[in-house]
Length: 81
Picture 1 (cartoon, one colour):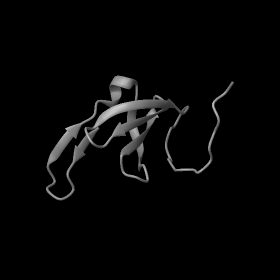
Picture 2: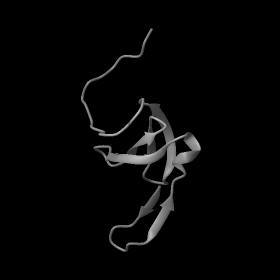
Picture 3: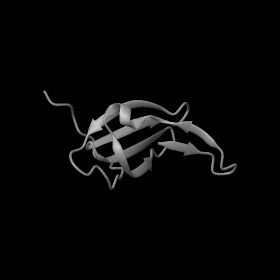
Picture 4: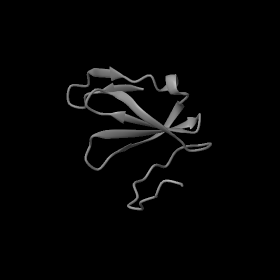
């Protein structure tokens, strides 16, 4: 994934999402506080969380086939067990 500065139109970063098995980005969603960007990958069934401060991958979530159409929810899910 290539990141550009909207004002200058300069490339500022490249995030190698394929390194975590994500291919064909289908949707992007910024966290409400702007600290992270979630990218849903159509191939690989993965949501990739990216830190906007340094454009590094912080974690991934398995989402099944066609991980697109991201949205935020206020539902809190308790850990299993």
